[in-house]
Image 1 (cartoon, rainbow, N blue to C red):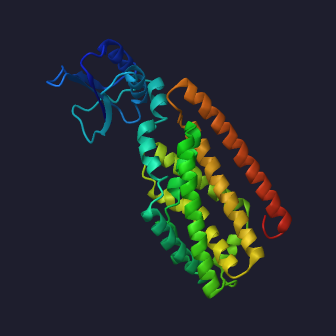
Image 2: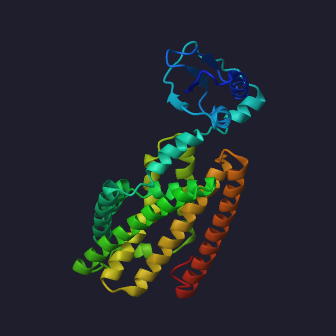
Image 3: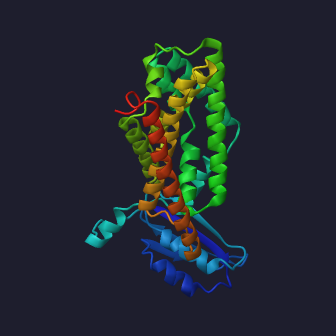
Length: 334
């Protein structure tokens, strides 16, 4: 369950506000009288997954008003319990449970921030991953994926694409690029100092582009988007995304640092295909789960953004796979 609180000036006409909110079918509501500051408070209680329609309506009605605020609060428990009886239509509606767009934006936008913690975690994960790959140490590689902060900017870019939010797309692109470049430079330094261990199965496996690797990246991106869009913890799926992105990027750095350009090219192809696959899958899931902007004009812009991104990522996957096939027809693809 969740509670939505809206405070607004006493002069606002509450009839259209209440009428619009009732269409969203809240479990309960309460409209408080004006306080000593001339402000009123409307409380709405919804089942988990409901309330987006009410929030959109409230924003539309109060858009031209000053001094109003909407707050979404989680409800840990409430008595009496809401009735469990649902019609087939209600069951179908709640089967597509989705976190509120505003909740998603707050959670996902934080992952697009480029700060010291992000860079430090990137450096540490790259060090552990590079050393683990070089030593053929599976445990170290897994540990590196646990601390890698790569999920945030990737999901933020896909979410920004679904909303047509250019600013979020640019911020997340900058953060993702900074993370990948930082990890690459760290791995290059380690490769130059220690040389790449071509006898390591963990390292060499990151030079093969197969159907399994593409499927893994697609599943990782889909699972990440699904977990956060339904309000489920994304900690574990963050590791899945790191599986597709961190080891290949560390392998690229190790090979470049050691001057193994042919192997570096193969690892780069795997990394590029994985990044594209993760983004494409996440964008698809956000679209299926109904992540849309609020207004019609914004939706039209978002639709164009989604179409362009679909086209770009599909073409990228096709071109990169063709390149991989051409440079290594036997080893790269099964």
